Length: 197
Image (cartoon, rainbow, N blue to C red):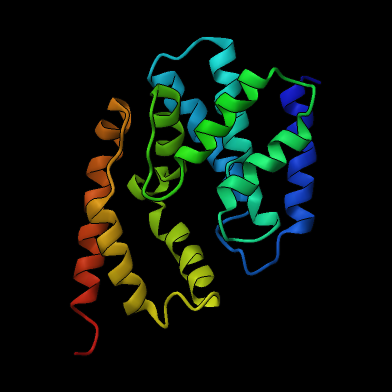
């Protein structure tokens, strides 16, 4: 098995056994989704270099691994975990590159290169997909657990603001996901009109 496959098996096992059940969104399923989305966007963006693809997949694999130790500054914790898992496997330059990609996913996202743009778009790919409301419900349950929102109205207010200010970075995500994201935003705005005044 290749190095990425070994690291993936190791980390997924940790995520499945180590993450609390109330993390209904930030879990192994999300991690696998982001890896898949990274691969799809990279293909659409014509990224073929093996080294670049490996960095991208490693960053996708570890981008939320920090949740194993808590939610606060989880991106920095994700980098620490990545460094501990890959000690002596990769050069310092490679490790630094992967950590730069992971840190770009902090909200508000701040990608500084094409690979970071791909990872950021993959991380929030669901915003512009037809299955948006399935993932949105998972995020709502998580936010409710942490007391970030009291009810669905609170959550819809947050979602409306987030969707309205969020932007995709890659040309292919703008083309493919932006129109569906706008439709999802409109659906939430319509739903908000139904709440009691």
